[in-house]
Length: 347
Image 1 (cartoon, one colour):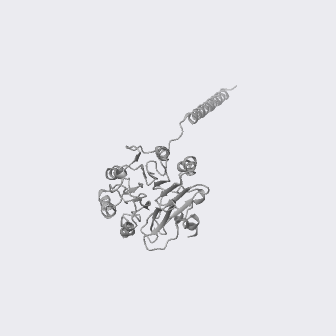
Image 2 (image 1 turned 180 degrees about the horizontal axis):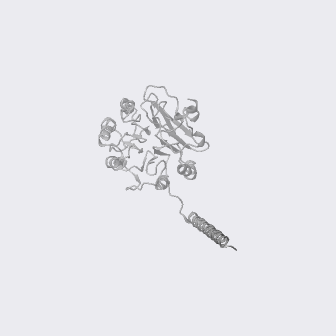
Image 3 (image 1 turned 60 degrees about the horizontal axis):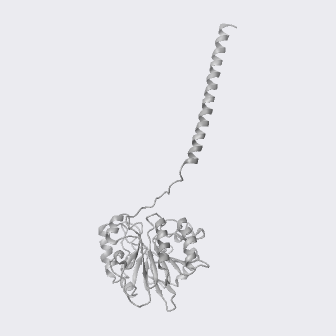
């Protein structure tokens, strides 16, 4: 073999050896990589929640006298009159820094609300657009100080953008109280955004058990709408809450396992207020009663527009509740049962 041919053979063999070593290395690396990935996938912990729960610096309490958490620090009156209370949501009204807050439709109807003579008033969150000392002072002066009865609030996201400020003025955001043999829960859907925290679910269950004797009705108040089902979720703004799609898997699971069994003996009403901000009064008011179960869902909220309304809830002589939407703009509203999902689909 010539010297030239030997050189070509040596070079070819060297290249082949290098190529073989490279392929063996790649295969080995690939095998190791796949093995490590497999271990990682198998051993990795379950993904954490995208928005973790906020751990509040207060305990959830059942309050015999809830004046410490009423926004105007007033106590419930001890009288023998049938129960009557007012529910209003999203009272700052139309979103936007340049808008008038609270809603002028609310401010112009303070006298109407007072003449209704409720035992108390419950707001369903978003009482201010921006939680500042100035805006809370205006809320106190023009709204809260106008009523001679307690005002409670199920906080919305706008209220607690500055949580420390809100709580320093109005107290804790999760509690319950009993009045005229009815049980009221004020809940916070911002501690675990668009849901209730696990501790709140436990608080509801335990308090109902402790208070069940002689209990006529249970009321749950919250800001965000958590209870729509797949058949009630649409892209049309009139059929949507102000924020989100209106469904919480956590709440729907709690509804199935806890609330539905309880409703066999005690009626349950659930109220949410993150609606009504857009023209047309999206889902305000809205009514749904579960078929074959004694659970009723209601929403109401203001957008400072023609469709603004509130709910007046009162006990009738037969012990049943009567819930009536009341317009803040002079509209003649039909019964609350009118405003079901089909009503909103037809708008």
